[in-house]
Amino acid sequence: MKFIDKLLKAQRKNQSLVCVGLDTDQSKLPRHLGQSKNAVLNFNRHIIEATSDLACAYKLNLAFYEALGERGWHILKETLACVPGYVVTIGDGKRGDIGNTAERYAAALYDGLGFDAVTVNPYMGYDAVEPFIRSDQHCAFILVLTSNEGSNDFQRLTIAGRPLYERIIQATLKWNVKDNIGLVVGATHPNELQPIRQLANSMPILIPGIGKQGGDLESAVRFGCDKNGRLAIINASRSILYASSGKDFASAARTETLQLRDQIQKVRDRFF
Amino acid sequence: MKFIDKLLKAQRKNQSLVCVGLDTDQSKLPRHLGQSKNAVLNFNRHIIEATSDLACAYKLNLAFYEALGERGWHILKETLACVPGYVVTIGDGKRGDIGNTAERYAAALYDGLGFDAVTVNPYMGYDAVEPFIRSDQHCAFILVLTSNEGSNDFQRLTIAGRPLYERIIQATLKWNVKDNIGLVVGATHPNELQPIRQLANSMPILIPGIGKQGGDLESAVRFGCDKNGRLAIINASRSILYASSGKDFASAARTETLQLRDQIQKVRDRFF
Figure 1 (cartoon, rainbow over the protein chains, first blue to last red):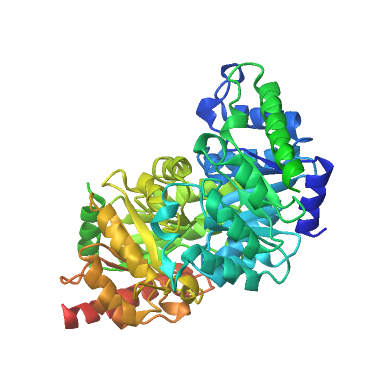
Figure 2 (figure 1 turned 90 degrees about the vertical axis):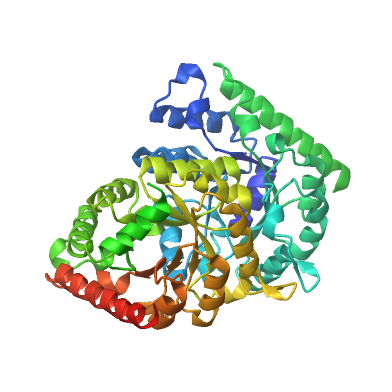
């Protein structure tokens, strides 16, 4: 199945634009789980079981697994095995390298681990992206306007009257011949989301930055969605994962996800 | 010891600006080593033993190790253990992510694996770089003008009359308060190296792209070095690793490295 169809189906089936960000921090696990590396997997499994009928996607932040050392790869793989097949998985590594190297990253993430999609840094240009978009079953989400403070350092620099990130979007539109490119736009930039969606046509937009990072949920939904109220992927990580530090962490994560899904639904009902 | 001092010492002791790029491709190993994952480690060990008195640095391309799956981390670590302590090690992962994520990558690469330095993608701005430059014992090599064709897509876009990559260099100069930032500039851009070196003052410049990628060695040395003929780090990967596919692969790698070191020395003798 094409990635874009899988995403639309998951959004429809679970009536959800929520992406649960599994940025699992070993030092923040509920105490009763212990602090072993297997506890990370155990935690992820419970979070996924408690939320997988409420989410359209899971985004795994690779840094958090690399920080686990040799076991990290195994935990990534086992975590992915817990995600129901119809829900989308995104390997958030923001990779980007020359062609023959990017091929290795693509092989590791798509073939080795089995991710549906990845995040990619565009600074190195087309040949750094191309290996990630060879199959329409996979999707590369290109960093455009990220959620962090440093996004103001370079991403908005003006080129011929327009911001750099717009140039990048224009390039991705050309590269998107297989309908398998998405964009990453932080919810911390509510004013830019509307013009970005207009440029992006029917690309999915992955929107991190709500919750702890202070992004604006209503704008994320209203302006991040396509005209049918779809294709925005609203990521929340810490607010869901650490909703409770007690034995009820999974049910608290479920409550938090449900609440977020319903808040999003209300905005969708109002505007679409 | 400060990173910059370690680098200068290694360049002096081995009379070399050569960086051996361990982009070890499992499918390209000499036949007699077999194709197991341990064969990669075995290969790396022999290459390092044959070249470590001729190089100032080893650059390990992380993609090639991630492609090995769960064993990759172990092989990285064991490979690093083969490098003599006075020679610099660079983890080439081109990471870059929001602050709290970049911290994980820094922990994985510096504390977990023990690299001296890393390559970092600047697109996400200061907070994506900062965790990599907290200690002056470590160095972040920032992507400026990369060796691949795609470097022409965005890196040269004009901002107020000057190329984007120059803006990035100017920012890194401000960030470089601990004297532990370097730049990555491909040898495939010989005309830009001279003005970049003038801007960069005494920063180290990591220069990939000679050999298979067709970069120009003379310009890399002449314009990549500081005024004392130091601080350019000239990377070669495939030309050294696969100098022979036979049982003599290690001695062939040594011959190739020696040749490259001597070619570089000749240019240094002429211009410095």
